[in-house]
Amino acid sequence: MDTAELVETWRRIIVGEHKSWVLFAHGTVVICMEPEEDLAAQATAILREYGPVRAGTPAGDFGVIVLQDAPGWVVYGHHDDVLTYVAPEEMGAEEPEEISVGLYGRAKRDQDGRELKIVHIEDRRPA
Image 1 (tube, rainbow, N blue to C red):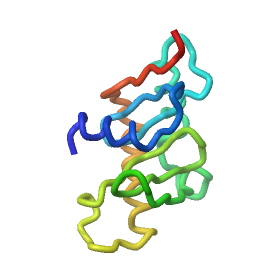
Image 2 (image 1 turned 90 degrees about the horizontal axis):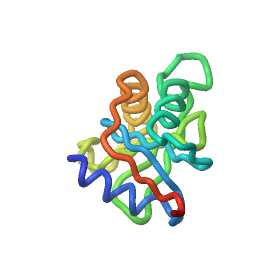
Image 3 (image 1 turned 90 degrees about the vertical axis):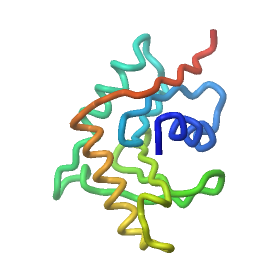
């Protein structure tokens, strides 16, 4: 899935006209619920802390949401505003188990949390 497709998918997933968010290279989004002046710096700081997986800590926990408005799943972790999209084609299996989706999404979040490469900023702050 290319960046443009990811952006359009996240636009369908994130509800709320004033929710700004930052998309990272592997599909992880940080929603800036209390946006600061520099959204990129804010999101990077959050993902640097809450993205990398640390086994045996809350950073290793995850949950899976089956999407209604887009194909695929969102995997969440120990920060409410850090979410990772998993597309059906990434999973290969016709009906993957939730644990497989969760582990895959968690691995993508970990990669984004270590690389910290921003590919899109959706600035929806009121003018």
